[in-house]
Amino acid sequence: MPDQLRDPIEYPNSIFIIPLSLFLILNSTFLRCSSAVLYTRILVGHQIITAVKKVLLFNILSIFLIFGAHAQVVNETISIGTGYTEQTWYSLMDGSTYTASKSEWDLAFDLSGIGTSILVNSSKGVNLWLYPGDNSDYATLDTTGMSTTWKKLYNSDTSWAYGAFSRVQNGLSIGWGTYDPITHVITGDSIYVIQLANGNYRKLEIQDLTSGTYHFRQASLDNSFNADHTLTKSDFPGKNFGYFDLDSETSLDREPYYQSWDLLFTQYTGYLPAPYTVSGVLSNYNTEVAEAYPVDAATYTDYSSHSFTKHINGIGYDWKSFDFMSGWVLEDSLVYFVKAMNSSVWKLVFTDFGGSADGNFYFSKEQVYVSGLQNANEDFFLNAYPNPANDQLNVAFDLQGDQETEIALTNLSGRVLRQRVINAFGLEVVTLDVDDLESGIYLLRVQNGGRVKSQKIVIR
Image (tube, rainbow, N blue to C red; front, side, top):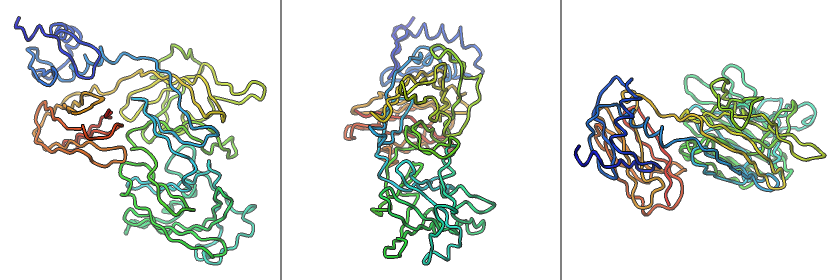
């Protein structure tokens, strides 16, 4: 046997080393179901060798996952601060967190292409009422009967798409305004009174959403203060929401890149059935949750026997309850399965809750399904190494067609820091210099035609 076929194959960023002969035996024994053929190209450090065995690139990834992705139970502690003063976004894949003060915003505006939802920060103590008259009454608005007859509005606890301003919808009305299917402009038709956390009242009108920009205005009830504002979706690339503080009259970029998190630990308004501020966990767009109860929480992993929901409160708050004698009590025999954006499935078991004393959520997580085993004709392989990276990042990907391919490395705000465009065919390795980037989490995106793949990158 030639010397190069005796050498071990070391996969970048993995925890195992196997001889090529063992790779071929395993491949021929366990993975004979492959239909397409191509010469397997295997990364050895920074070089590519061609193996004698013809297999799908799919098979390489399968072997990698068989040996390198054994599930491990990881214990985590996520905090939202003493007195629940913070919000913390969390990634299941790498355990990274992003924390921001919950008190720094009043309104949150949906940034998605067709999104119109506007949230109110009820966990901060902000209250919102819908004025029962016409928006032509803005200058002369009378608050008589507000606390008794006006409709008080809250965010939905099942969908990000139904913020407090968007709860009353009918036909072309999206809550705060009416959609024009010809101009695609949403024109405001409602007036609101908002009580800020400091107790001050303002009247508020969302005037329109035109070409991706929200126009809105606020005023004191006696009209001694008036201000007009805008918030433009494109100013917050890669985010779910853009935030606004009414007192300081400033917009805020305060959440991580939407693909970098799965769960949000926070206070929010739940329904018991009456609206009530609770502390719990909400899920990101395109993240699904299934609940298994009662089961053996230590050993149960049969996620496929349960229905997944896209409701953002799939985990929610009710995995715990408060006993005035013994304090916080957790539901036993309860398991949550979380299906992330990439379809990987994680098992979560809550083990403790610190309450307002420290705001700590304690839980264990275990990956029970690894996504990414697609046919090479339908998708493409992507792996960046080393990860974490210090000086250089090698981006390896395999394509079946000769097309222009864009490689971009962005920060969590969506700003492109490194970019390469090449004509790629087959297995390619592109090296990016990252030695001048600050330590932190970044997002690598490779786009080939209509196909896009992403990977989180850690720079040390």
